[in-house]
Length: 257
Image: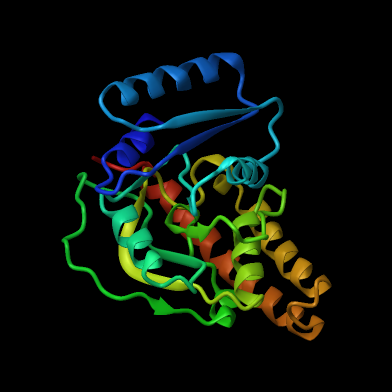
């Protein structure tokens, strides 16, 4: 968490507020989190607020609670094991302020940052994404997203593929996502198959299938599309499972710095 907060404190455009949601963590973990926050605040001017949930309800519920507490025009998300490029907010929010009709942007994600290396300063215009391209692959990582706070959508309160369901609901409702090719967020572990919720690949797969079913029930996609999407999803799962097995067998699975 401390490295994540430090990456926020190093932003060239400092966020007006930082809302930390403790999702049912025990008192000892909350105390450690508060210590980390104090260390970061001592060397920065971050405006940090805490939201403490009494029970663990999963990432969707935690993010929704932070979203509801937000008071600024834009909302971004950052998990404890991720970091932001120092220019993420300046580049992404800066572009959105000059394009007021855009409600949803994302960018590339580097899943396992090595050597502390950041990207060069080159910058390109984002590209509009077809919502149907997202149906075939969820290439939007949560730490890369900036949304307008006024959007009425929220994360489904489930533990797997809750972010994917939200992106698709927004995109299929007529809010075109825009995507920057630069990797402005970084993970401190492999994207799946190693630790946390992503360690259970089969539950992740069931979450994705549930997302497709949810969209079909809400009539955002036709039921006829469900078996096609499900078959494609299962094929991707088989590939991920094989790659994860190889990773565990031949590598430690951790990132090196």
